[in-house]
Length: 173
Image (cartoon, rainbow, N blue to C red):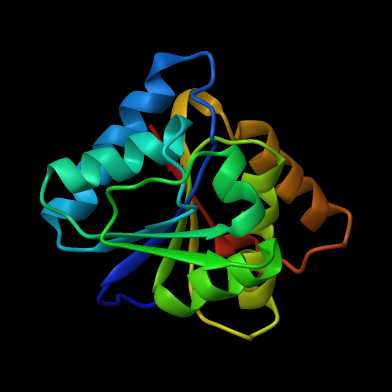
């Protein structure tokens, strides 16, 4: 990917904190860093877990935050009330499309199936040439090591072209 100016980043992450405190610490550091760089944070809109941590840190550091959450999840995940903008959408598909339309890059912190779904849809859109936005995995304490190994296995087995493997950027910490 060429060097580019980043004005907005989508962050995919869990609505839970996980068992390792390093996950929440990294989410907080990322939110602070985005604010310091004047990069708009666009994320899933929840006040829970790593989602809440990244948003709270960005806001506390003077950053701008837009949340995008389906109305059905807004009740269950407790949508964040302190955001600059909270967009309510009807479906997860609409959530991903709205988030993608607002950002220059995607960053995945640790998370569950939803985080993987969002990350892989963004990755697929780039692979298919529908957008040119990189996906970076914030690989905290090796959280994504097995996934990165599997991506290499996909290449070795002929299911992912070698030119597409670098679309997943490994940000190990």
